[in-house]
Image (cartoon, rainbow, N blue to C red; front, side, top):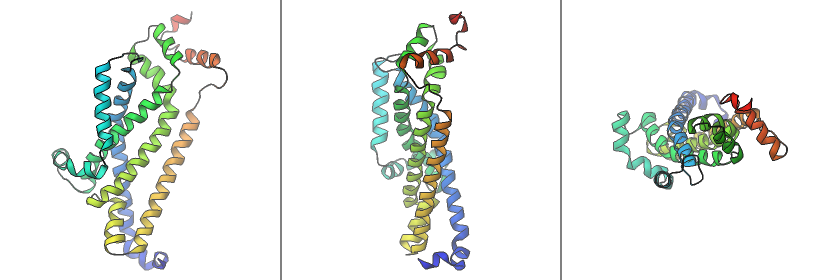
Length: 250
């Protein structure tokens, strides 16, 4: 372990550590974007098609729920191996950073959908009903009510999602995906370079702390929900709906 603090260690492994850290960040960033492009609409559909949603549809809700539950049930490493032919079809390779992104997206999207569903169900039902009574369309309710009101919760959920994807990248390293997980396996375990294993663990911990801190600060900054009794809160939310149908307030 003492070699970690020597110049020789960083001369030998410094560039490699930096490269694999960037690979991990690339996998996390790209996978998060595409996972949200899939998971966010799925989460919204789950909420609006519920029995008491703004567009209830039992069959659609049950089918979506079943698909999401199946996606969440599969351990990541099993999912990654089982969809390798699909991964190669999409990105042209089964390994490396590109080969990890597809299974990361497939695995994270159902998880994100559930996180989005949980956040949206926390929105005050009275505000949604008020928007409906004013004639707002389902799309307007989603964009003007659900997403803005749930944004602080969505951001906090985003931190959990990103950290989960980060953990998946470490698992992906076990099958040659690159990144810090691959570094820990190849050098820390196979070659018994204990210092390398310690470095990857520390870097992953630092990344988790940074991600959590950033998302928590953003969530606190955008949380403008009115405190006080329920009536004042509903009135404040109704005022936010004025850009939708301002004539309703005249």
